[in-house]
Length: 171
Image (tube, rainbow, N blue to C red; front, top):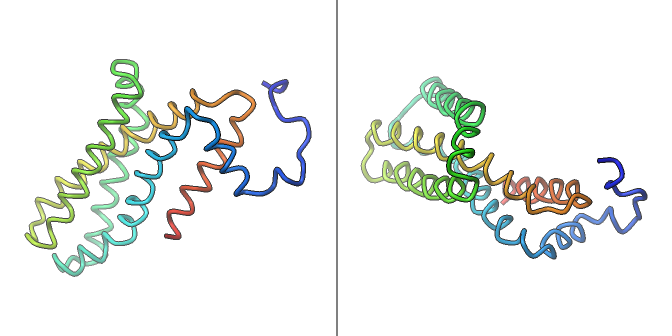
């Protein structure tokens, strides 16, 4: 609501490190932000290194890798656009966030195994597990963060969380 918005922006409010510090000062958000980073950092590495892994171990060409990533994106869209809302209503954000994090860890492990056992079926199972888990985690974790944030801090928290996740792409 407009009455809950910040009425005046001070120069100190433009310091991104201060804003991130303000987010971590909100006690009930700390572990949710850490969980978000536990997803963001491996995801950033995954998106950049998966193609190299598939090219080097399975000798896949860019077109094949592109089709695999298309399937991943399609499953993720279906999960986030249609399935996760129903699952959140049934099991809640906390359970889906935990299930999503566990599923992502499993999928990263499965995909990493192909460095030792170069088997396309393992990649397919890992990608499906990744897409489903990501589709469970992202909406439920965002809802937990939004619900734990005071009304007047929504913009600061969403902006700081986005900035932190963007920083994981640099790392």
